[in-house]
Image (cartoon, rainbow, N blue to C red; front, side):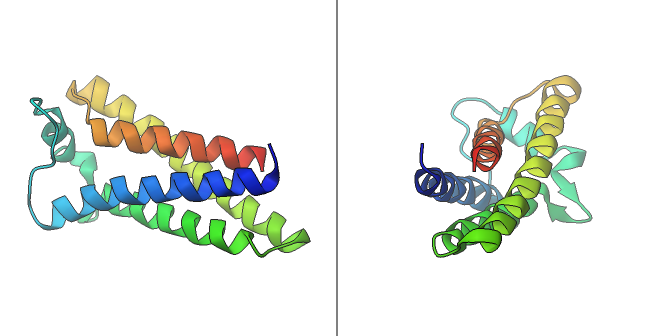
Length: 137
């Protein structure tokens, strides 16, 4: 797969992540329940102690990360050489932290709360794909 294709894929997945994290963040600030089908697991997870850090919803941190990854993806389309490499390394670092955070949060949700949030699982999957894409870049 070409570098250009990998970068386009990273833009697509960062866009998907922005949607998911944006929906969760917006739901939090509007104090509305997220759509989770017939399950209440999403609400159990989103009302847990780790759903907010210092009064800021965890999803907002994810939203910020996805927006930065999206911006860097677009910036890489016109970058070459050392500039391109630097932007890939920053993206790789962000996705690495995001991946590890997602693994921890999913483990916490399953082990401590006994619930799973499909939106959170989707975000974790998207971050995992982005981590792999940045590794390949």
